[in-house]
Amino acid sequence: MKGQFPVDRFRNLPTPFYYYDTNLLRETLNAIRSEAGRYDNFRVHYAVKANANPKLLTIIREAGLGADCVSGGEIRAALAAGFSPADIVFAGVGKADWEINLGLDNDIFCFNVESLPELEVISALAVAHGTTARVALRINPDVGAHTHANITTGKAENKFGISMEQLDEVTDAALRLPAIELIGLHFHIGSQILDMGDFVALCNRINELQARLAARRLILPHINVGGGLGIDYHHPNRQSVPDFASYFACYHKHLRLQPGQTVHFELGRAVVGQCGSLITRVLYVKQGTHKQFAIVDAGMTDLIRPALYQAYHKIENISSERPVEPYDVVGPICESSDVFGKAVDLNAASRHDLLALRSAGAYGEIMASGYNCRALPGSYTSEELA
Ligand code: LLP
Image (cartoon, rainbow, N blue to C red; front, side, top):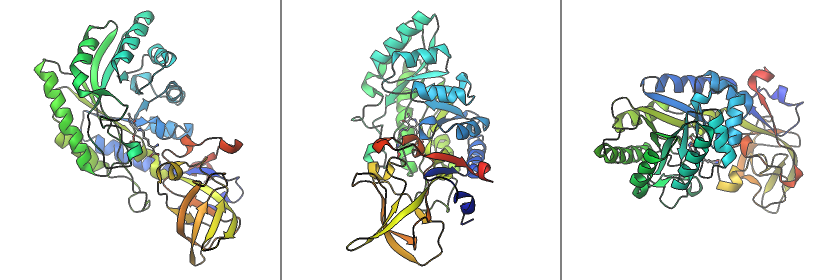
């Protein structure tokens, strides 16, 4: 055991693989339950896109969270893990007919609708089904988030949501179209947000829009504020459970609700981010001209975040206590961007050492690909290896 890892159990396992600390996941879920539970009108959904590993989905469902899905495949994954359709919300800027039909067949709780043409298609498909679709309008609030440009979603230039100028027109359509029940508004401004001020800005915008609707005597029972709470990638052990108390208190303080309204959250990264690590073996230590490389058997196909977003993941050599040296930690893929970290201080590494890439539980395993005809990484939970 080094740190939190059962290294001896790892030694005989084929690498690379994801390792999930289910104790930490449960601790995180308990914190969510108790902090959101302070407010009896708060309802938390898990954003399945962050990690759809069935072992984790089951634990998350058992903790009482709902599921936020963005594709038919995610709806199927949520149903397979036992989530009730009544706890499933379905967002996505390009829902295909079969995906809408899947939602209608299962009578999911809500479609988060991102455009007028989508609303018209949902109406027509629901009429054909002889059912009613509950919908929330996803509004693009034009609120910036202080995060990576590739993961902001709530600015006017982003493809997501209905523009605020169109709110009245689309609301009218939702009230007029057959087989549509308008039940709420939906928002999401981005991901890996650590500045509570960004969420305050969203609350202020929602308050404005609610006032606009109230002027039309329209009060919708559900306000979905999306997800986005970030985690500490640099110090995964310092605050391994995110500060849910501040997060929920921020919404409680700044959102002006109408009587009877429920607030929905869609958290992904904050739920599963810190419980997962990618475990990889050192294949070779190679001396370069001015540096040394630790060439590992995991690549950008297993964890694409560093290559795609220049994201930082803390890297640890979990099988060495030798003095620290700097390494460029790189994968085997034929791409120059297949680099996990440059000048990373690691306990001196040699062939077959195991490295852990920390904070990889969210958007790690689920974004793996088969590029270079590579196999997808496996996964183990701490319970399985105990
Ligand atoms: N709700 C909606 C509508 C979303 O689009 C997202 C994430 C979430 C909820 C969950 O956000 P979270 O709580 O996890 O921040 N692959 C990127 C992140 C993309 C996030 C996309 N949308 C990454 O690896 O950083």
